[in-house]
Image 1 (cartoon, rainbow, N blue to C red):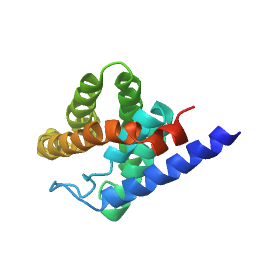
Image 2: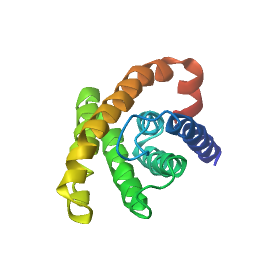
Image 3: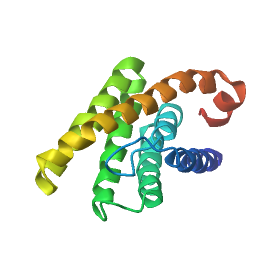
Length: 162
């Protein structure tokens, strides 16, 4: 029961960090590309893939809200994609950290926008890929640099690890 409280506190902490990162935008066609994913990646590595998925979905929705929901309800599709990608990152991070980062970058920049070829058009896809690629690299690099430092911190390690 005590562990549940730690997980909920961690989710709140990383979601708040995601809200702060959502305010730091990457220049793009759509105003929801931001530094909101790195706290989700941190949560996935520290708390587990499920917790990271929750933070990733909420982080994207917060970023979209701050950008004015330019794609309307399609942002819920993107939030679902983020949740899946962050969960995959969390599972891969246990075995191979750089592979997890590479899969997240490629998934977020190239695979996640594929449905928009059919929902919008191919031009929208081509226009979004460069900014998604830059945003994915920035988010992943920050997460890969910060995660070992947070895990090595005795307070974090003692506070969140079972």
